Figure 1 (tube, helix red, strand yellow):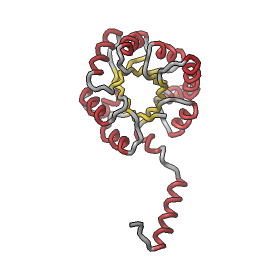
Figure 2 (tube, one colour; figure 1 turned 90 degrees about the horizontal axis):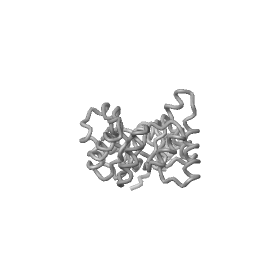
Figure 3 (cartoon, one colour; figure 1 turned 30 degrees about the vertical axis):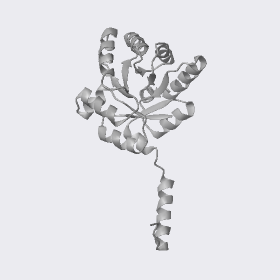
Length: 217
């Protein structure tokens, strides 16, 4: 499974990348606003910080506008993945951009039928939003399971990019189901390494080592 950082914070991205924890980055207009950065400048810097795909989102609502913005975004760096909404116009733009070899990430997916359409449009990634479904008392993980089954049935190459990840448990369950990628806030990615028994064991080892009076070097 690949891990993407869902952030536009370049400091967090560099730290995660140095730790070998991420394979790409996803951004959206809300994350760009939070970072307080110029959009294209931020995307360029993020693309330079990681070799993996970096999702940059269009804001036009019509297919022609999305395609125009997408082609412009793709010129920023070779690893840009153009992020498009799961609407009919978004699917039209996806087909055109993907047909020309531009990586695409179709976002705001909330049903298996939507994911099926995105795959048929040639999307590189489909982004089902787990947490937002859970918020309305639906089962976000069930959606990941349905998409996995459909894609496997027909050999679609679109990667399932589980989004709106709220906890390490979401990451584990997505891995068990077979999602290709999870994109999560840096805080969630860092927490994947946490376990109280690891901390307790390390404390005991260090205490015993100190009692030996020895040095490793």
